Image 1 (tube, rainbow, N blue to C red):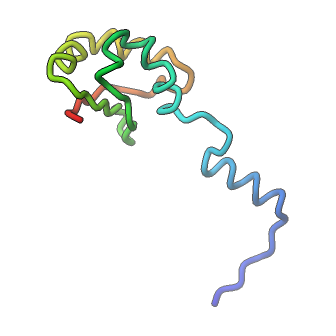
Image 2: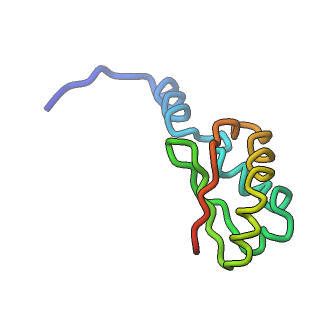
Length: 98
């Protein structure tokens, strides 16, 4: 068994908050909150899920027509997403059936 040095609880909690982003809105959460404003009526048929390490946002779309509309408006949607706080690193949108 390896013995580790003892840390104070306050410092440990601060480190854990930074490491796991506790109390900070994630980019995915910000995008989900603004999704109806970004996509308009298409938000009823789609849902932003995750951002992969390469910066691609995965969006689940429940209807084929909505997927084609989102694909046609992809550049405008991406521009709106990049303006959101903490979302400037998003490089593209991956549309999936779901």
